[in-house]
Image (cartoon, rainbow, N blue to C red; front, side, top):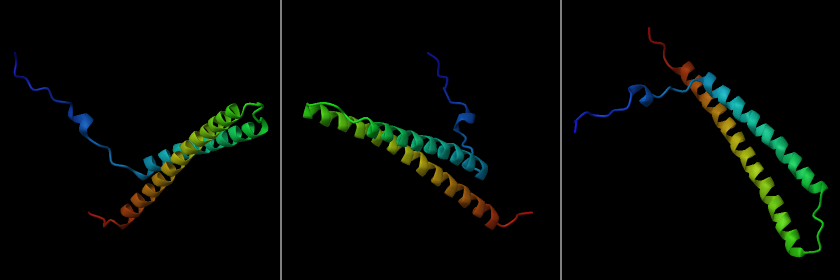
Length: 107
């Protein structure tokens, strides 16, 4: 057998530092997805409210309402996650801008 060392390329191990422009771009995408999911959640909730469950079986009504609650809850969770990510990326962009402005200029 050979004693050659298998190493990963060096390019995959380097990290690109965040920039305010990349943070703002990510915040716009995350905010757009959050807003789209919010509109989807409102649409789902109004559709469910407009079409009640018609059944004489209490078990079917309970399961139906639980499923409806889970569907709206999952979409609301996605909305919240994307919104928090957008706010965090905007805060990071502001922090990076403040750091760039307060950093002393080196000639």
